Length: 170
Image (cartoon, rainbow, N blue to C red; front, side, top):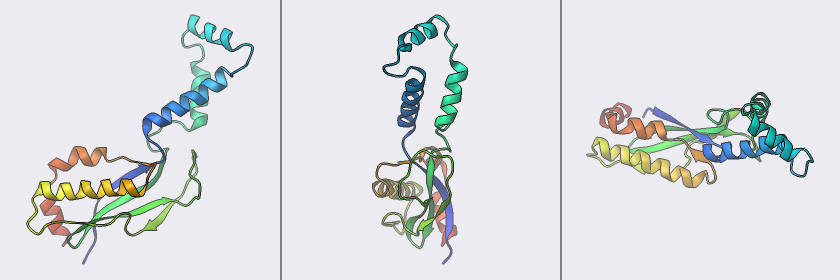
């Protein structure tokens, strides 16, 4: 029985909005330190000259970690069919504590992240897609506190000929 991979889902350390909120707080604390005598004056200067701190702000945003997309990925779920099941191998960072970082190495972690989901014998395209999304939802439980980006799967899924893809994996 061959394994046919059909989708790689990125797993992020935290959701996008949470990352950008933390980055904004980080930059704000540096530009306008709490308790600093010049804090309010610097805020007033920035309001008079909007954009005057853009270069400095950009530098600290990059120092924090840059943009969220791709830089905060800590793993991938490699989706595939095995027999009559949907499964996903997990590749993740090999660290005890996962923090914001730009140096990471992904490695194979497990052959099955969540319990497999069975596909009915006479499944339609929508039945198979439902099984795939059910598996992704089960993976969310296994990687609690992390964000699985399934936006491409959700966008493309209804348009994929799942039965043919599934048959080809048999």
